[in-house]
Length: 111
Image (cartoon, rainbow, N blue to C red; front, side):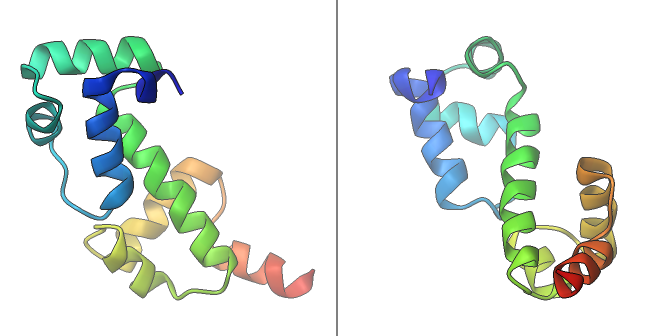
């Protein structure tokens, strides 16, 4: 919520949320916020407690988890959120959640 209270940072957050699969770079986000790159990164981290790229990864993984939980295919979800392959998404998912998309799917079926 702190990020949304800041007019400049909120523009970058809205951009991330509107197009989470885009290949966002910090300088793109800084430009949207109307700030220098270093100032943007400092303010973003101070307000949100994580870097812009950390926030982007976490947001993508939240969306990925929701879609996989609904039964979406890993390949389709990987393309939607900017991962280079289903394997790349699986590795990122494993790092974030400590389980694989396949394990999530099995658990969903067993429930």
